[in-house]
Image 1 (spheres, rainbow, N blue to C red):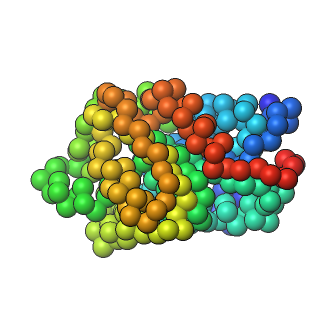
Image 2 (cartoon, helix red, strand yellow; image 1 turned 30 degrees about the vertical axis):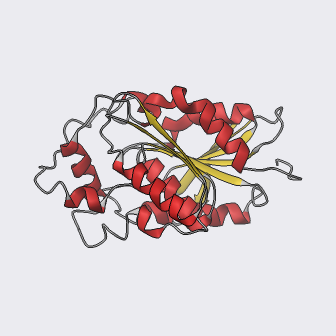
Image 3 (cartoon, rainbow, N blue to C red; image 1 turned 45 degrees about the vertical axis):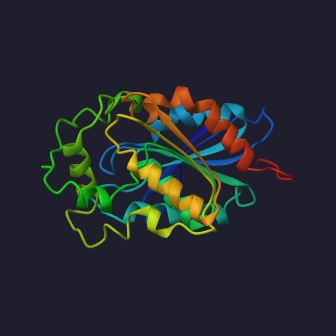
Length: 266
């Protein structure tokens, strides 16, 4: 497998990505893999595991870094994904069929890209319920807790112990720099249309990300006739904590929706 590190996709913002590809395998398409971290922690290196597994199947996998708090706030990480898509359109990858995967905050951004670009998306524990959840949890006191080790810990070991409303409220409001005027605009379910890309949505039943996010998204996709798959995973594991359990399903989803006809990998 070949890995190209720190390819610049936005010079002005000094943003880079890592590209994973195994040229010995039949080419399956281009996958964008967006790391999690609550928009305040994380790095593209944290998703080397997922990217390598997908590349081993034959996908070209791009894992971007993006700006995070406290340097920027919503919607700037999504603006970085728009820059990535522009870069792809000018690059050697511009004719490749595209899908996107992400976990936690990255799952939110994967869904956002499905809405904006109509591409297939896999979201594991995506942060999807924003405005309604905050409106219904006004009494929760936001608290960061100890997040000092997040950058050193494997993603599959972070936030695996179940509900933590104080932390959920803290990092969601941190993403908005404590502003409340953009919460509805930032909640993806309100912008689903018939042009939205198909989605694979997973969430643990008793984890710290509320199941209401993928349930409301499933309802919205149903209303506009967009195909989706929904997986409620038993237990408290968060995002990549249950990746092994859903991996085969996510691969089947990508193979079904990221279609290669007469495209050659570069």
